[in-house]
Image (tube, rainbow, N blue to C red; front, top):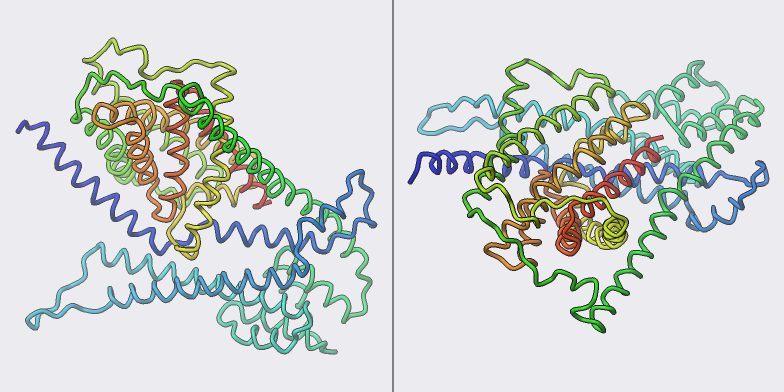
Length: 508
């Protein structure tokens, strides 16, 4: 066995352990999907207040509003917040269980084993997560109470607010005063409401306060009508437009399957089906590029360099965090491409079928068509997947940052990272290199499955493995049929851009 292979084995073991620990750590991390649903619920609550007769509009937003909302949007919203609260309680129980296990002092032969540095760090992480979860639980309970009060369930609302504790007790107390219709109110109630509530929930509390004080609520109602009309427009953008895209995708998929049955080898789905790539390198080169070029550079080298430099991104503003994400991703991509180049340099010149990239209308439509087909497939898998994970399993951290971002510069930087840099680098590695390389040992469909699974695992969120693998399969299928990286890059870019756009609309 050569020294190079021994080094590769050690690096592989380290990479596998690192990936496994990252996936295990994501088990109890919240999915962003749950937050997105509540953001959308908040838009629905605003939209429910919309009275189209109060605003001039050339669009029949009233009819659209009825199509977007349920018969009782307040009850629906209450159930969603209650479900989110229940999921959070389950997550808290798991976090407490882990903290209790780490806090126990192991006794072996009457000797005390002191906790390791890793254990201490993990304990601090769990304590921080529990504090955040407690804060979020109180926030949910306060909002559930407001929904109950608006629905006329005053007794239930009082009981809900009575369960709120710690830093949120002041807000809960203020709301209890309001819905008791107290004649004597504390002078700072309006400040408490403005400081601790937002959106539709703040509007309802302020309306209640002004009604008790005998003030005119017309100005508040007019402001809410403007916000409500904007909410209807946003719901159209994040709901109806993707719905039409999904319906188009299903129709396209049915057409392609029917064409496959009728035309068989002459159909679009069968195009290039029997063609394979001439792979001049063996499995060791595949192993080397994947482990060193992707996992080792991204999971070991870059964190080590940033650690040595003493750089702490957590203290940065959102705009600089976005820039940090872009720079770190470009460094990882540069390292990965360098390893790829060094690994296959001896096989130059490569056959013409390798790393083909050409811009054409035909290949653009391969990518766009793949995006439309991916929409219903990934959404369906995601819905099933959510039932299993119950809001847990982690998400890509860039999504949470993008959701917070109302800074156009930060959003532009996130767009460069997710919609330009990521499609180029990831398609080059997973579709341009890995998928064709695997055809030396597997059929094309097997290479698509394996490369898609590794692509999903590389994102290090256990709950996203199945949805991302589904997306990876569509990406692999489009690339294997078009034989042009431009097609899969376009699909990948459309997917990430659509996700970022939805996050920006919801976050606003």
